[in-house]
Image (spheres, helix red, strand yellow):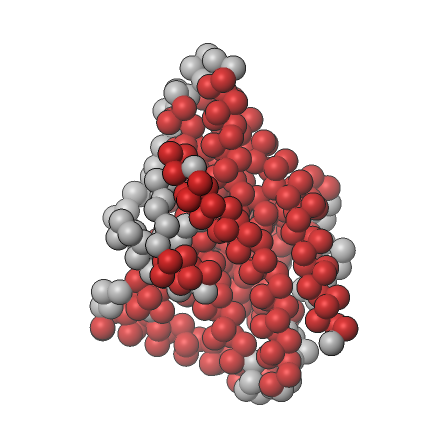
Length: 349
C-alpha cells in the first residue's frame, strides 16, 4: 500500500476524516427534510471544512508524487493522464446519473437539465444552470473544479526545473489572490481562478516541500500542532460566514496536515487502523455518492416510521456509517475497476 509519499497512513487518515466530516454535516442538513429532529450542525457551511482539508492534502500529495519529474513534457502529460483517470470517470458517471434522474424522475430533484450547464460541468468549468445556480448537477462537484484547475496549473509548472518549482507555486498563489483582490471578478470562473482557496493547495505543497527537505516538526511539536488544528477547526465551525473560508478552515487544515505528517515521520504514531485506512481509500467514492446515500437513508427512515422516533445524533451517526459503506461498495465495484481498465489501456498503447 506504499506510494511515493511514503506517508500513506497519515494521509489516508486525513482523507477519511475529511470525507466523514462532509458526510456528517450534510446528513444533519438533509435528514431534517425527512422529519429527523436535529438541533446541531444544521449549517452546511461547516461541512465544507472537509473540502478545505481535501485541498491541503491534494497539494501535499501532488508535490510528493511528482518528486522525480525533471521538467519534461512527457512527464506532465503522464501526470495529467493519471489525474484524469483518478478523477474523471467516477465524476462523469455520477453526473450522468444525476442528469438522468432530472430527466426521467424530475420530482426527485430540484435540478433542471440545461445542455450548456451539463457540458460545462463535465469539463469542470463553473456555469450557471437554468435557475442561475453555479453548482454542477452533482452539487458536491464544485470542489472538483478547483482540483482540476490546480492539476492543470501544476502540470504546467512541472515543466520548469525542480529547484524553481516551489518559488513558482508561491508566486502563482500570491498573484492569483492579489488579482482577485484588485479585479474583484464577478463571474464564477473568474472568482475560482482568483480564490483564496487556492492558497490551501499552496500550503499543502509548502508542507510537502518542508518534509522533502527534512524540515519536520519534533514529535511533541507535531502532537501540539495537531491538537491546535483540531481545536481551531472546531471553534471555526461557529464563526459563520463572517470570516474568509480559506482562513477559518484552511489554517486549521494545514495545522492538522503538518501535525499528522510530523507524527508519522517521527514514528510517534503509526496510523495503523484498518478501518481508517479503508475509509481513506474510499474517500472519493464516499464524497461523490454521499448525498444520494443520505437521501436513501432518509427514505428508509421515513418508510419505517423511525424519522422522529430515534435521537438525531444516532440517526446522523447511522447515516454517516451507511454513506461510508455505500462508498466502499462503489469504490470496489465501480471506481477501482474503471481505474484499472483505463490504466491498463493507457499502458498498452
